Length: 334
Figure 1 (tube, rainbow, N blue to C red):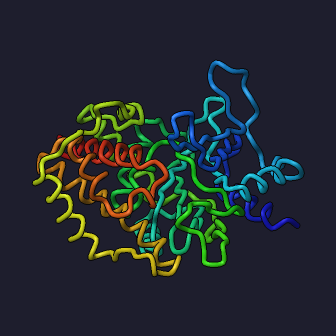
Figure 2 (cartoon, rainbow, N blue to C red):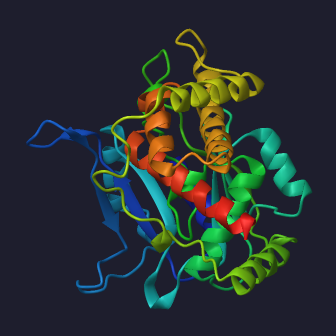
């Protein structure tokens, strides 16, 4: 049997979304008429509200010509992602994605009662975990709030914390340029844990998030984060702000280890994941110190180590990281 299909089956069986799935194929980088780089995403099993509805994808779809097409796109440089279907009024089926986890943080996740239904190794020593907090859908507000809390608690990527984020699909390669191996190949996304289950402390986290919403009227939702617009990032930042970011960044980064061109692919991959955690910790500290988001975003763009290598869209990454840190801090301060 096809090994890619076997990997996909393991993942979908563990995610256990009876309404099916939506697939995103992130195409290789292109340049628009102005010469600016961009990556378009082709969607399968999903349609806009203004379009005729399409059937969500089920496991049986991942065979024959469709699977052959996905393999071809991946070989050409596309990345393959998946998430629960939003058809029939479904939202997320209680599944939350936590991105950029280490083996140590995965162990803590299990020990503290947030046992994942699925874990994929998306690059050497870098993992994504799908945690089912509930058997039922969670509202966008509740799910996003829970996702941010889990990312903050276990060192995940806050920019990927929302109510129905895409995760990588096993059986395909991770085509980010910095994961390219010396032999020219890219690492396959593999399943390291597949055991569909309900997290034992999931309901407790849901109840906690509900209490925050009821008590403070503060709802951390994807809609609460404005789109990145012109003027959102400061054009000029005072030197003390830049120095403060650099000092915090390098001080915290020492605890995790940095990256260098002569590192092995495995160590460099983990270093990149750790630097996202450093960005998050610096953002929370500087916002707590009173730095305004626009200045913090500009400082992060200027000073965060190898940002353009780590993230395909640095501006969006910085925007989401800072805005989610601000929402979390505002929530805790109330």
